[in-house]
Image (cartoon, rainbow, N blue to C red; front, side, top):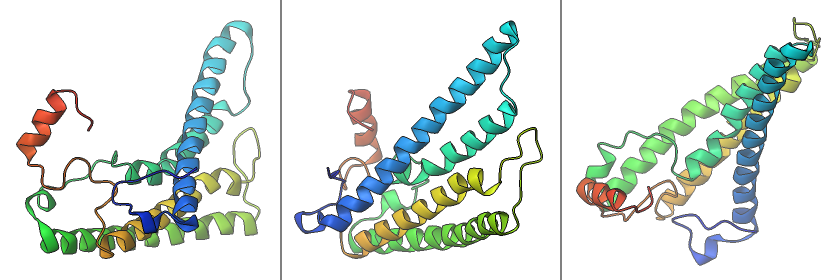
Length: 197
């Protein structure tokens, strides 16, 4: 099941494109599952107080789920154009100039996230190598909750590289919504009439 993203053309919907889209979608679903887990933990802990039911290290589990939710959802959010972007300059550019500016912005973002990912993966690997465990009630190996953090960053790195290659190839960014030549006034008018964001 492939997901058609803005900027895709017929030739880009091969097995690699489908696999990447499924990776981003799967990470998004995983983030949603962790959000449900946070809700369940918090409700059990709140209602459980009335019945002397407690989840050992419930706060720790909720924190780990929150980190996994936040980082696993990044790539899907980015590719769908739901991530907050400040495009004041890019919105005023057109044609080749805009494409070059998009590539530069994606290059800077990719460099930063790759650097962050490298250290997150190293931290997770070190936790596994040194058998670090949580200091709370439940002595869970720390590399397990850290997988959501480092894995989410790794998937975001892949999404940024994917997007940069797509834009360099001349495709419209998948995160860009609306018509490429839409002015801010036209965008506001479209939204006020119930059009998609």
